[in-house]
Length: 156
Image (cartoon, rainbow, N blue to C red; front, side, top):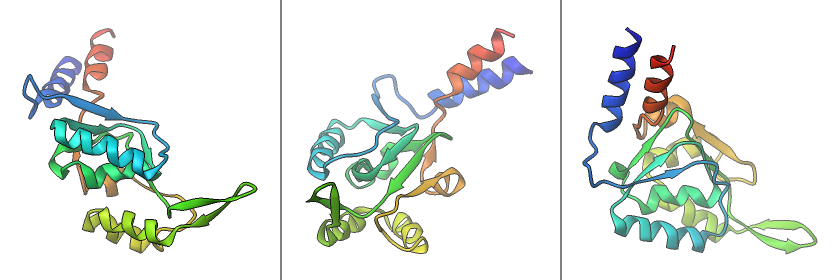
């Protein structure tokens, strides 16, 4: 039975992928400057590659939800999106919320993500995380652990 489960998981991993389709994996990305991420994700969109979110994608990384088509994004069980208000340095280690940039980021998110953010008080200085069932209800699942599952179950 373990072999069948592993084989099924491996088949699901390959389902929907053509041999020439490239994947870009996002994991453990804490974000950075908005402009840098816009450039990176616009290039990704133009390449036609699919995105696998398989870990943390926080702050400016969440621009991927705007720049890459919804049908080119999948999430694993490890995926977590982190959202907060945009900010600018204010000197001496302080920051100030950039309302204009925050509104721009918010407007870029898909409606279902906006509703989720709204229910949690909007974009503030505190990070909020979209993951688990809530995230899985918005984006299609991808099965990145299938190969590891297949290998692990066949070695027992």
